[in-house]
Image 1 (tube, one colour):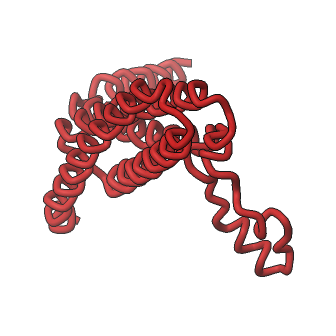
Image 2 (tube, one colour):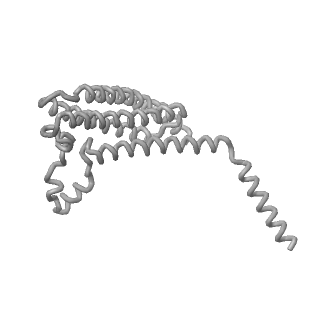
Image 3 (cartoon, rainbow, N blue to C red):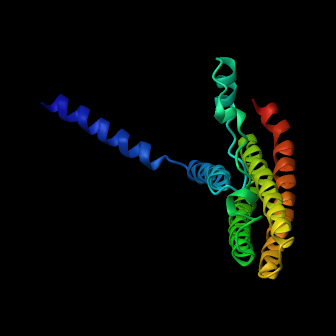
Length: 205
């Protein structure tokens, strides 16, 4: 019995020792990893939202390739997806309603991109930028630029029929353009930070 109790005591003591030996550095690394995941998750969410709401065409990628490869290229691959302008009826719906939709979508895109840019700034301050972070952020930036072109195209089509509500849409587009410019700077900084850190990682490995 004494032997069993002694063994249990050793296990309990070793367990306590393991907990007490968790370093502050390990906690910091965990927090940094969470920040990185937050950036990538938010970037993916932004891209998914843009596709779901029709700001950009949904990328079918491998699905289309598989259909063609196995002789299944049918109406899905032959028919181009509806553009944002078509989706909101830029050419035939009420002009004021069209511009209000463009304004709402452009402001939402600008707000989401700004929030993503904040996460990029926090990651830059942490000094731990991974290749996956850079790729995710740059991909989201590309989607934002495509969204801006979609909104602008729709505004141009609607503008050919009237200008009621145009001012609000133009202001929202300007806000999105500003957000894109700021995100572009952050993308350059993320890429530079990763490039600067890569030689050190290689030397230490």
